[in-house]
Length: 529
Image (cartoon, rainbow, N blue to C red):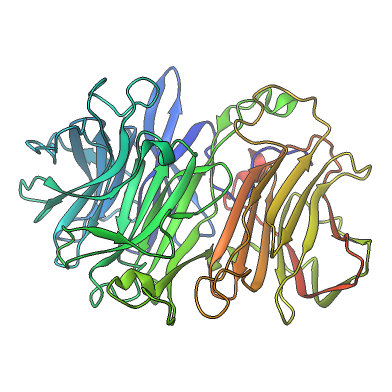
């Protein structure tokens, strides 16, 4: 199959999809808003999708909110409110027109500016890309992308002509309703232009669903930041010096430079607080970028943009005697874990294509997997589980053509890390996939505590999701940490649906268990698009 549109990653029927903007769970329904555009008629709008189980989704369509960014939060009465950012000096709320409508189809935009009169520190050009969260004391915090600069264009933190230094800014308000407005509070994170570029985008701070006991540990929080210089999302873990969330935000010693959520072209992500799970959880989506041009496959394409699979972010409590862990900074007692939401198992088609314990690969050999004629190798999940000491060097090729001219090879080594390389029969086109070479990599997971600190971590699981032209690879250690790498792939041959395991080494390799499933689609009408 040379299908371009994914089966089980969120897309739109037409137009361009990008940044997730307002994500929330309300009365049994997950609500996913994201930027959408269809020029020249619609330069920008918010597009709405809903689900009751994270498995099947309904495209509600654009909602008539022509703003580039924002977030979502519940007001004092539990009503979801969208916060829409007019980059610079305005943030407007929008509320559902009919709360009896479970899908909250229509939204009413308010003219009220939530940051009217906010006085910003010297050198800060304005407020943009906002999100919000509720602090442990019930007050509201508005989180804004920011920079600090001494000259140049004061309307934005542009990097090319008037570079600044990146930072994240927080404003606070005792409430969201009754005419309350936000005032400047603090700068929880500052970076240097030399390391992170001139500005931050799409920041979000969160505690609920992330910190295991947010009421007992009211100081620890996660800070999600989009770094345009890298085109990646970083999560910083830290703790405020006081429970008021106004003092210094001290970063965890485990992630002084932040944790990269995905080493591929996944950007502008945002998280959702899910109180329906036990315990409550934090779910992340990111925008999978590219391509500008994928040759003849995209000649008549009327849609663009994909969202990542939903991933659960969580903190994992660790016990360590290393100085700093469990000490004055409570953030030092945690590691950041991430994995695809377990609900996605509901898309697996039964029976499994393969489910075998003690999967043996002889030295210098290759082992193909037979895909039943009723299924397609362009929509599968592969799960590799460890045997004993963890997953060693492993190589799996997907979307392989019969003549081997096309394939995407996934290789993981506990020492050198993860590498994904793609070859296809398409004539190379300049700018085909912006910023994505034929090969891309991610580092190995290193243990962060105990006697093995700094050594390669034991890897329990390797998960590979193949979805037409999207590939997501997730490596999960026994400590719960992960490394993820997403890539866009564009096979052009109809028979590029094969799967092969390989062992390039001189000795036999045994994998604890290998399971492969065909995967269904998330939209009822997806096969028609």
